Image 1 (cartoon, rainbow, N blue to C red):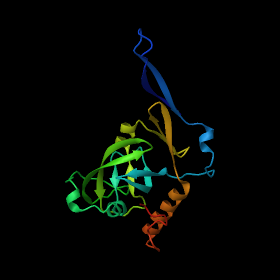
Image 2 (cartoon, rainbow, N blue to C red):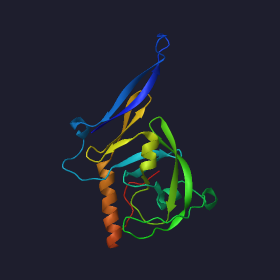
Image 3 (cartoon, rainbow, N blue to C red):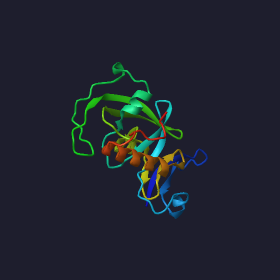
Length: 194
């Protein structure tokens, strides 16, 4: 899989051309699988810097249209009701049920040196994840993700940077979701966010 992203570079020493365009290739190869336990079918779960904090258990989901913030992150960031903006559009969860919305809030999300302001919909439902990053964030960052390679790649200046997914974190989230659904034991993953 490969996607080229253009960037331009000024060439002050060449009076005939003021800019040259180069293409960064955002691609994956078998080398990107090194370090993953094979075979696997894990979700792409990463750690991102959100609102100035390193936040674990972030689900990267290119099929989702809205960035979601769950109660653990909402509480961990010590948000108050007055920090939130109204949001009244209906939202349907993975199970087809309408999700209880709290509101919306904008936070900076940092990957490497790149920072993007993201509008999160704050919901009041259980999730083993702290947040879901969706298509709006992907497009703003110029991201290409792969669950096969458990990586996110994005252009940063004239380089390709990457976020590596955590298989252990993804598996902890899966176990927590199953326990929550069956009502057994604690439904909180063992690795805490923030």
